[in-house]
Length: 62
View 1 (spheres, helix red, strand yellow):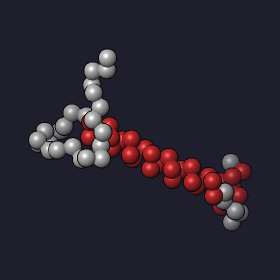
View 2: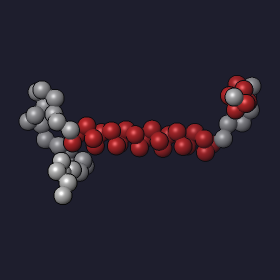
View 3: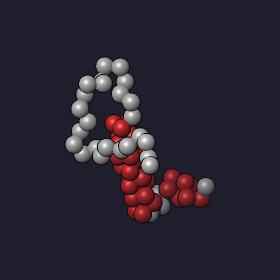
View 4: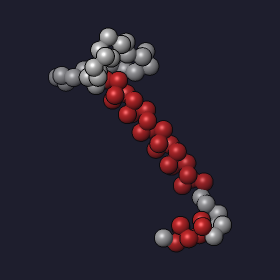
């Protein structure tokens, strides 16, 4: 709570705090995109090719 009050009053905001959120957001987008591309395709998208950057993940681990 003190952090929010400090920021609201014009105090210095730690750069690492913002960096953690930015890196976390980027990681969530990348991981979510890989999961979406590896999931079952929605109707109308079955014939679409997977982008080269997305790795193929086997559904049946052995």
